[in-house]
Image (cartoon, rainbow, N blue to C red):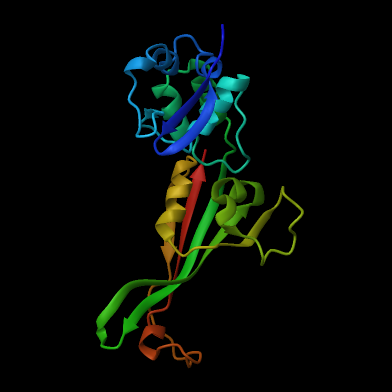
Length: 228
């Protein structure tokens, strides 16, 4: 079968491949689409347009080229990629992702944060909901890296080279608690417990630059996530 170069626009991300690659799987939606490309939706440049996740499509193309699943070590979107594989009707890729998801390492990750409530010029009348100084991460090093990837800050951890160990010195490069929760949920973790210190205030003098009223509302919360 002869092959021609094909340009695609997948969700706004552009790809150049060949007809041979796209039709590797005879019963896939891509094969059906290419065999009827005269009726395909096209963008303003004439590229075939597919209204799906353009970033994840790179893994679809890789699989069609090589017939194997190869993902980065810190890849966190296996469930989403599986949905894409189901859309494109690629049974072998669906099976590989299913097996991959079933063999995820079980474990426990604890997420904690020190926070307060931020006050404006008008004091209590101008309270902002939450002010986090840092989100802390505790658990097995390999597991924490798998879940949080590049958002994990390891600069305070003294034993960088040792992977199969535990640490309580990791923290995140951002201060969005819900983003951390989303990342854990995407990797199959479930919240099993939490605790907090409450906002009891303190008699100690606040550090320079820290608002006295805000200092009274300092608290620490911790959340335990488990993947079985």
